[in-house]
Image 1: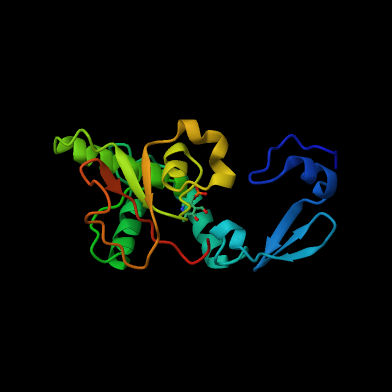
Image 2: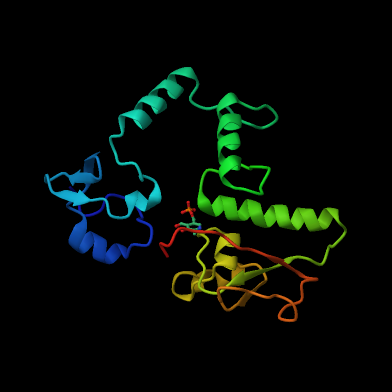
Length: 199
Ligand SMILES: Cc1ncc(COP(=O)(O)O)c(C=O)c1O
């Protein structure tokens, strides 16, 4: 393995990485473990950043993926639906009581960007053109794109990008929030993201 493999690794100090770690790479995975090129076994304690909650070798999931790829690997929903997205949305909406529409994105940060855009467009459509700012709870993390960094500002990660960020207000993070009197809701849309207890 060469000293550098030409990849910038996210949230990784590259100087340290090239110095200490770059000889090992992941080769394979089975169940909740993965293996590197030297045969070392690791417990996947963060479920591959929450993308692998069922383990690496669940036959049910692998078979479903193979079947789907054989049928059709991708079909855009720009203007025309497909049976699987409709099936999935029906299942999700049964779980998310009180919601009645879904918008698909392919990662968490994009989902936040979409939510911000939907809020902005909603208020635009109602004629509230001043509502261009967002209100979020302190200590939240919503992702790494511009909007997501704005509403989930974490100084140590995002300070270099501060000049690019959207106008946001942050309030403390109590269990129960009463917004009346704390903020000017004429200008602000509120973002709340329900999460698992990981951050
Ligand atoms: C609560 C929360 N929101 C958003 C994100 C961003 O998701 P993604 O990394 O898929 O962009 C994360 C990622 O860890 C998250 O934990």
